[in-house]
Image 1 (tube, rainbow, N blue to C red):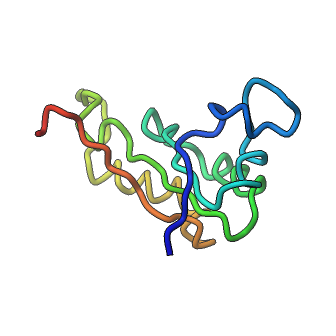
Image 2: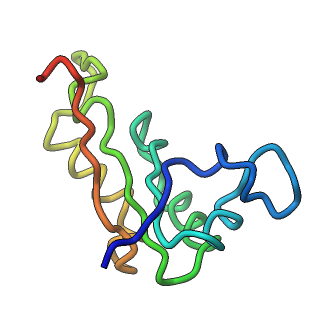
Amino acid sequence: MIDVGLTSVAEHPQLSATGKSTSTLVDYAQYFPVVELDTTFYGLKSPDVVRRWQEQVPPQFQFIVKATGMMTGQTKMDEDSPTLPEQFQALESSLQPLIQSKQLRAILFQMPPFLV
């Protein structure tokens, strides 16, 4: 089966039930069964934030989340940055609510163009 979804949520005002200039996850989930969220590219979210995402969608709704910029080499690591294994552990911990509910469809590792 092929599921169709879009990237992002707020950038689709035509889905807004209230006519606002941005749509919400609640609006989005009325039309699509899956979404790609890039917010995790910029930084991991707490499990509480992830649970709030889940509260806005039906139980069968699926999430594709981006790996962080540090994980894909697009954000520079410094001496205070977590190691790559620590980053993977933090990602797994962050996404536990989605993993437990089987709502995590995939983790997208969008690699930078300089790798080609």
